[in-house]
Length: 305
Image 1 (spheres, rainbow, N blue to C red):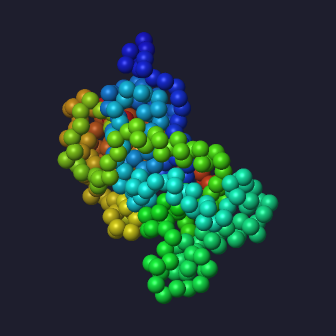
Image 2: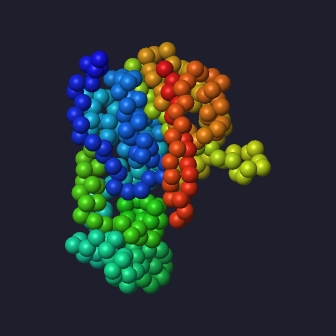
Image 3: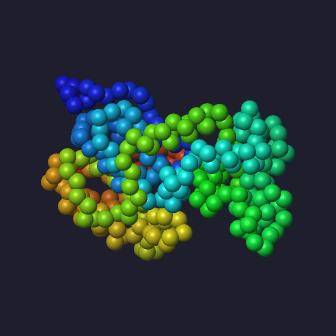
């Protein structure tokens, strides 16, 4: 029988970020949505929301759902602080890009012009004058973009969403439209920017947990390092933090909550989950291009009720 609480669902589709974001779970959207529908709660909590594709898309489909997205990412926080649409247009104007021309077409058909625009883009982040390209002594007097605006330009126009070199997909009319839709969608959910705290408490919630993954330094060593939690701030996710995540789940387990945890196969967190909870693991295999090579990848969903 259809869950009555789902009658308000409007099939409006996904809200995709108009930029690349490493670690996005958008590729698993259909599977995540099915798990959510089978375990529906009135609140959806994403504590490591990144580019927020899942919470934004859920709000687009489940109109009455209460959403909390917590993001601790320097680039995304700058995107939220600034008028990203205005900054993007300012960046396009600065590199003198013709809005009638898609970036991919420019890269393919007019490589010299693309290289000229790329040089202008790089000037924004260099120690040179953004206008003439000459090295300057007092950079602040010649600044065209603030540091936060530069971060926004990197994520929207830079290669891989983090570079001072132009992506070959830095502009299209569709990308501009997607950015407008994305920025509008952000206003529909509650967004916080806090470091994870194991003492947080929630109830009647579907809690989505996609923490930074711990990686071994190499196959032989047992030491671990984490992804940067916030670039340039030296905040890493470690084994200790995996333990804190387990404590958080235990603290919130008997409050009518459901947890969906993500991780890489056989990582430290997966072992902790198996040792501490009765949980169901769903393995998802896929292919991803990394540094120009197609590689086989696998991740797990862990459902805890």
